[in-house]
Image (cartoon, rainbow, N blue to C red; front, side, top):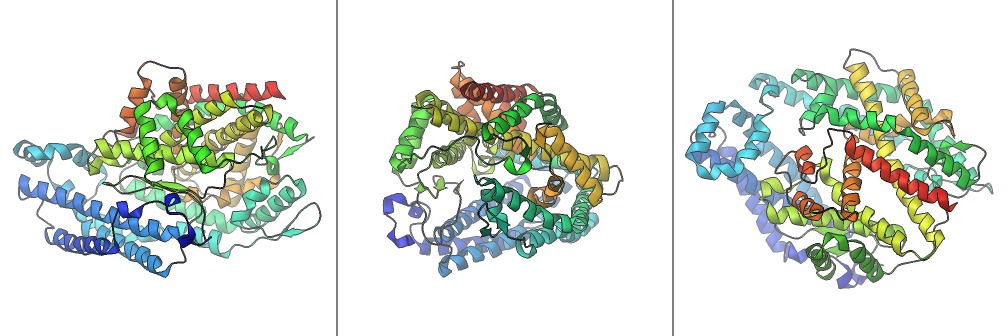
Length: 594
């Protein structure tokens, strides 16, 4: 189906953002003038409280205008990526992003050069500045890690070099690497790519799964020394920049920049390690349900139970999601319905449309959701997930000024996962047959395994290689990386799993490792969401109101403090323990059904 053949009610209404492209172009011109003005007032932050306020306001206005332009251009491009007009518009916004960054680059260093006493005097003299106090604090609390102007300029110049390991890995992994074909049980050849690999591992044809697994990792094995050098270079550059800024190492810098206590990371790993018995039971059940004498790493992704063939119309999906989210209250459901009725969602696939799903939008307009809806049960979950993001954005945008509306990745997956947890509970309560119930529990357990256990294993690998090796002055080699990863794989999957030799190379294909100390946040966010959803389902007094306060808070507090609104303290083990309890509860349900 071509884009123009879509029914208008099944497409998002981009006119809610810009009624026409003339208005888009007008804002683009406005941004150009703002950038010139901003560059012209460099050096003025120390003049007066009024001038300080003027700079902060213009900085915020520029970001708001740019965000709207950038989102509009890219969402139009995503409608049909073959449309040359929107290819160009998206490209123009990439250029604008670089120009904006350059025009604003002077502000933070200049702000940090102002003495604390002068800043406090500004806040006393200009009452309007009180609305910016938290914004300024988030900058100034990094003061001890900001260096003199000459050194900052030097670090800025070499930062591009610091990105080279990531760039080299990306080019190798996405453009250059090629894999042998895989063969299925009938001898038919299948092309192995980064995109097709996981779908092959989900195939019921075990011969194909094994063949694809061996084909992919045989190539990573051939390049293990090269990839180890790239990984080591990335770890070294991260360690260099962290230590130059007076951090102990890359781990401390990554967590400190988001005001996350170190014990959050350490407690996550410690608690998961202590509670491996649930994962081992899951592996044993997987082996039993698949009817295998030996469970191998290429058997991890194939569904343990038959997938129900039932299809859901989009109208049916919306009704199911609304009923599942009823515990959130009438106001939440009314917002959900508003999104359904007023074209927040781009529903179906068309030629050239971006794949996957996401929630996005710009401050001042409602959020948008992109889907490629096919009518499967997984698509129903995707709808609940993305509307969780969308309503989180709506609540934050309604209650917070622009500077505090955006929320950080540490809490970003809480609302979406909470919605999924409510949905699976509802579906299990109203499922008409055991086949569907088994599939639903399988879906949840696999999601849990992939997020809580797998991402924590990645986090433990990063801690071992960055903090315990590179930060301590050690050298990383292919042998060390492979041994570390293989031992962790054995630890996380247990004795019931054959940790095939090829899995030692899995570290070499994970793009997230080139953004060090990022992946742990998937696990912490998932744990927080499961804890909150369990309290909602248990009818805990006041929890829904607290959760909505959390949704409405954007980044107006540190992420760790935002979750405390709901009584979730990620610096202690309790939320992770509570999430693992839920995992084992669902595991027991499936064990009892087979």
